[in-house]
Length: 423
Image (cartoon, rainbow, N blue to C red):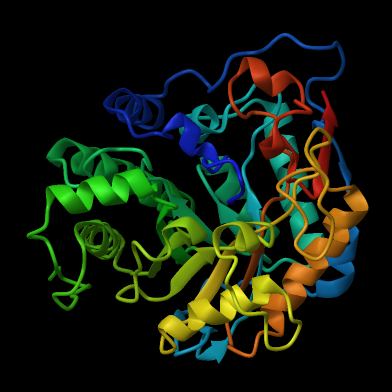
């Protein structure tokens, strides 16, 4: 997500799972039967097996009324692309998705991800969340760092597909540093192995891997400056022309590794993309991947791209920006991998049509999100669908101590269409 604050307010702040220590811990937790994830944490008394308390905001109900369709998963689906769409078994499959990070008071997502098992209360919460996402009419969940139990619950539900974000540190100084690439590949391997450990008897209901999310401008510029000689990539599954920059070469190499490792280990390959951002849209792009992905927020367009032409149908700047993105590479599908609005109370109020980075009422979140979805679905340039950011309020940003309460000054903790009400 993007806004007037110059950092994205996602798990990148914590450099999710990219240190050698954490990679080592991951192998310990998953291979050697380490303790069951986060320890018990102090909190109000009560039944610690009951799910954490949540309530749907108006946006949840409104999206449910708009989508209100469900799919069935057979385990035999094959996903591919044409020039405009992601295809399921050869037919267009419009993505109706939701971002999900299982972060609750006392639990940090990157700790939960690598836990060998989870406390019953957290398992019950994950099961309830996935059921509510399905009931909303979503056909796809975009996972970030997801524990094994997320895939087990998804498999049990049987009516949702997923996109898997593969976390790449967005703030490193050189993406081609050999140790960094080794650690990144180790993390990628661990996520692929975790998924396939659940789906051992048939292919997972996985649409695509997203190899990275919103690399920072500083990382892109530093990497490109350090490696002017890198302008193309030739791998087993991905080969490019010699017109790339070094950051794009890195993304091509990581995507090729995803496909090769999964094929060599499990005999299957999935689509791969990268989630880009309005701030770096002119610095890095990935038309050499299976489809293009962008995180697009209505409030970001007038701030970062004030010269954007209005949309051809709705007249909004968001739709205009989406149409501009599609026009850059019209032969590649474009998926909107994030759009959303925060209802944080202590932020300036902007209102429609672009709304603000925080400061929105719950009614405005509902109206704005419906408009965002309409902008995407009615764009004159066909696209592959939309993923709403996000399902659950993110109290966990930015520390374990912070996870026990919702900060009225932290815009990033209030994007959920599901309100987290406490313990």
